[in-house]
Length: 585
Image 1 (cartoon, rainbow, N blue to C red):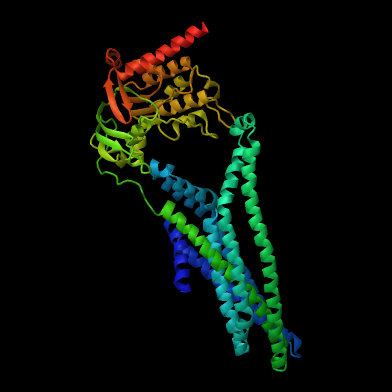
Image 2 (cartoon, rainbow, N blue to C red):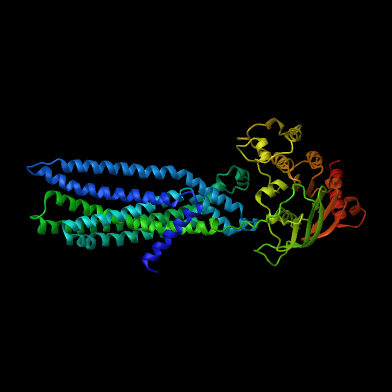
């Protein structure tokens, strides 16, 4: 691959990134390039006219026409710089935010299995730490590179107009050697940054652990600060050692580059004085010397900009390939989902995760759920309950078989349909700081009635916070659980899914919350998983999962009257409670 094709490919990666975001229009990039190209021409023009000003002021017949032209060009250059910075600034924040929205939507459209994969988490690291300035950095590189190219071409043309052969001399003794050595220096710097990327991520990770208050009690208890802090220090020192070695090497190389520049410039200046001192004016001598210095600096900039463009475009390609360009959102059905569907059907539903295709998490499930029933889903840890929920919600697509809700498969639902039909509480309750309790419950959704929220929090230990901002309030595990239950039960969804909603609650609070849930879910379908067998007696139906299979499915009373797995689990838990109660007595 030649340099032109390589450069073209890298630029296409970056421009493709901007094009996908669909806010930073191509005309904006074109306008910026035009402005910076014009500004570069004006800057070189100002230098060229300065030659005439010097010559006119040093002659007996002074003319102020050149000075007037110089003033005009400088004024236009200042206005051009201001206009280009204005265009960049006006679009900077807006496009960064739009990029984040695109990334967020792309993340949301990922399946649960993709989102939880290690490779995708690494890509999320890139979003978190590199996305913020991607557009601004890219545009700066693009306009800087274009401006530098225009400046060099214009300067070489201007020098060639005065002394045709000296343009070639500058290229040979100044531009080429400096560009080669600067490219080597920048290449080593990029290599070190790539080597440091792993240790930098590890450094941030262990730093976040050591400084995280949620880990503090365990770190203090196990006296683990030296161990974890040592890992933080080791990765941090690895980064520092590489950077120190690189900086020391770069100092030596830069000294050598500066010596080359000095020697080359002395050769160039000596040549000018030896062969042209009698034929060029003071202004022309000033222009040739100044422009040669500007050429050297600009050529250094071009080398740095090209290498940074290569590096950045690889990051943009990573971002595009991993996050933005792939639209994994499922094809959505054209049929309309009724607000209150009639039944849910599982037909030969099986599922396995891609990282372990030999292990079926769900195995040939056949099940019909009538709308409006209250169902308890129980089973040992790892029996497939959470995966069952993910498939029902359409967050995962079954590996084989089909789930239908009035003929529609959940993974084909639109976001709006899913939010309107379902409401759920997942295993790990979340409290959103900066939102009031009411906002934590609704998350922007409609409620059946605001009175239901009032009644739910009435008498709860969260009632004193109701209506206020969580702010710095630390909620206990039980309080977070109650908040998450309210979020899952109070929305308008007709299918309610509660995954272990009482895991962090004491028995009294548990009974109270379950009673409230059953009351508020009247007329709605409620599926609740739990390891507390006593509360399942309040449900219409109990489904027992074991190793991904439905082993029992009936009303709790019927299951208790036969030698079922449900009865064994129920009796075992009851015996444990009795034994513990007897010991305390």
